[in-house]
Image 1: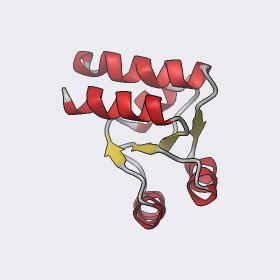
Image 2: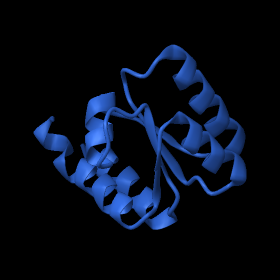
Image 3: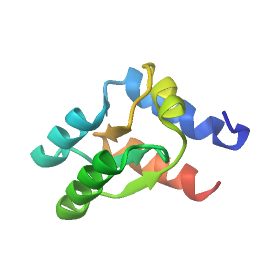
Image 4: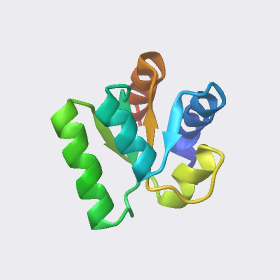
Length: 104
């Protein structure tokens, strides 16, 4: 894991423990379609098909996307195995993660 991203990934873990994260493409799409998604973090190495689905859903629902890390890093940060993406469902966690990413 890139040391510069430590705070960023730690914040994903904190949001997960608070119950404000949904992992994986299926759950992220469900949250986006229901209007509960505030931010999506997409893995750099996600498949083209999954990336396209997530990016299209985020565009149509006006949800920001951050492309960062690998599937392994994102999954590990969320306390899981490899994940294509995580969807943050809390506005404060989303804003904090965007600020941390901008500072990198």
